[in-house]
Image (tube, rainbow, N blue to C red; front, side, top):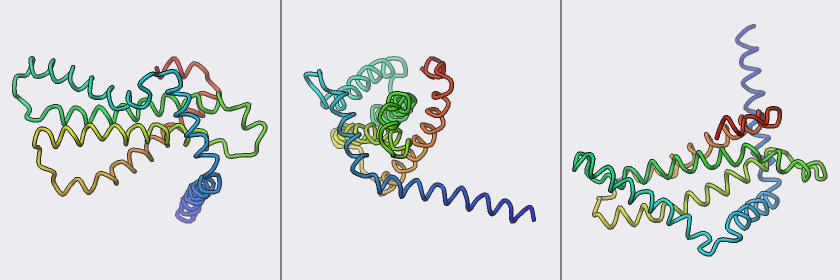
Length: 191
């Protein structure tokens, strides 16, 4: 009896997740519009625009490489590659969850007028940051080629890692955004 109840709950959770994914596909045009709007708003008054997506990680990498190569002279070969990989992943997660936290509150007026799933606004924010993350991988690839680091077959697992990171980020974003709707102090706590 207990096992059948657990199985029933697991099936309900799985069905709910599948229906959400179908909802995302059904509202693909809205998702695309929201992502494009987020990108336009983010870089509206910026002279360099999307180029900042490439420059910001490179500047951080240079600063950290200079500092850590001075402190730990030669203890880690190819430090810039390791740093940039971790920094880009962390920056994607931190920025996406931070912006998604207020996505429901910021979009409340819109989803009161239109019948759309509320989670689409959170997914749009994460997708926007995913695009920035993917663009920021370009300097990482250039750096790997520049320093002569061999590209190993494990690079084929990169898309799987990105999917897992994105799924985790969406999950955390759902949780944090839901809490923020009820407790606005969450924005101060999370920052």
